[in-house]
Length: 85
Image (cartoon, rainbow, N blue to C red; front, top):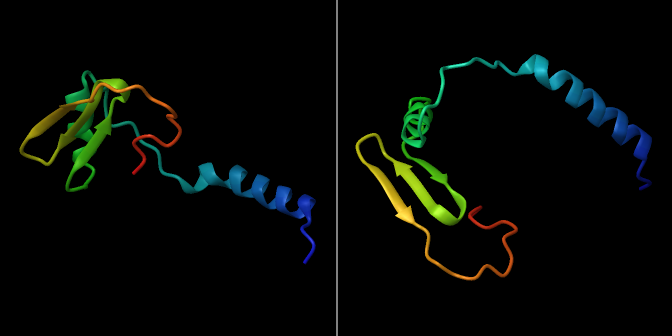
């Protein structure tokens, strides 16, 4: 099977062009703090919200408790994909 780069490029361009037409975007307010942002995300429906903050740690909210876990100090060897699991 031959890969037809032009056909793939045209298809992807059309998908990207039409993407904005299919997405309903609305502003729900201004985030004043990390806790405010997490609460707004929680209001969209998930049971738990977890937000990572790089070398500082991570925040979690389950509708009742806000939890902050400080990052463990370590020497990073490779950061690609860190925290994606």
